[in-house]
Length: 356
Image 1: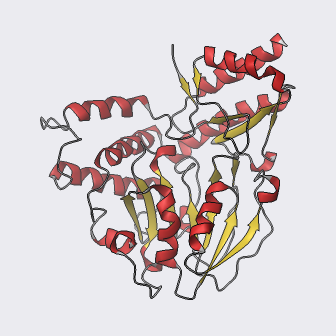
Image 2: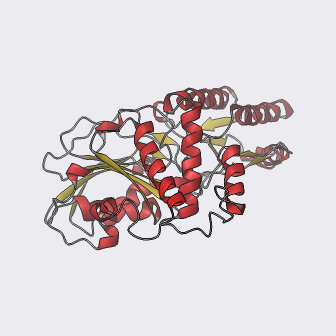
């Protein structure tokens, strides 16, 4: 039976990425060696890293604009502290928008470095919306936001206009929608939501914002060190970087971000239309802030839970359970999830309605 993978991350990847990755594990580039055993300094892997870094900038429309792409390790969670280490001046200040669990975790780390101003928060409403009315201190060293909130199913649709450098955690919607990415001075994202397997972390940074903090930064946490060493300061996550390259190639061949955005919008519209139409379900996020990546919804009557769970599991659906912070269900519709899989879920929801 075909599986329909709604896992929030690690998540579904294109089938061709699995196939090419599997082949590379057995024999990479007809070398007689596995991708798992080759030297990260080998000509073949250096070419992988160079192409991956270049393709990131190409897809984001940032070529020739003073940005560098890095494939690091430690997940987005390590970026929570690398960002203030590299951008917050000694005795400086940072501004943060609190829209969910991961934004809150980033705020916690930044408070270790200096004054951290939370410009707005939706915590009191269980992060069910994106705050709109807030001001960013003009003397902040940077402003940090989280573009998509995996757990609560909300997404920032409009980013603020400010002269302060903008840092954005795009872990769960990177490469999913067209934006003017040059509005951001630093973007980071764990690979395992839309780009590849767990194990590598993408950082895209405008070089001109670095080196201004007067801090002594440990080498492994210094973006300038990683740029100087071309993302090879230490042994990178070889396999995760290679699989990410394959996913980026797949996206480019599909037509890039603008092409996948249309598909993503179609998937989200189909599911949200059914959530709103079907009297057995209700969404948890404010409609205007709903994420196109992660749809969170509840049953109106928990008495139907056992039957609904049985139906979606019988249909080959996997990973639909919601996060404990929200409950209910979460359908993560990342780039590689086909529209067909969303149709299967919608049919199951309709089937439940017919049985009640």
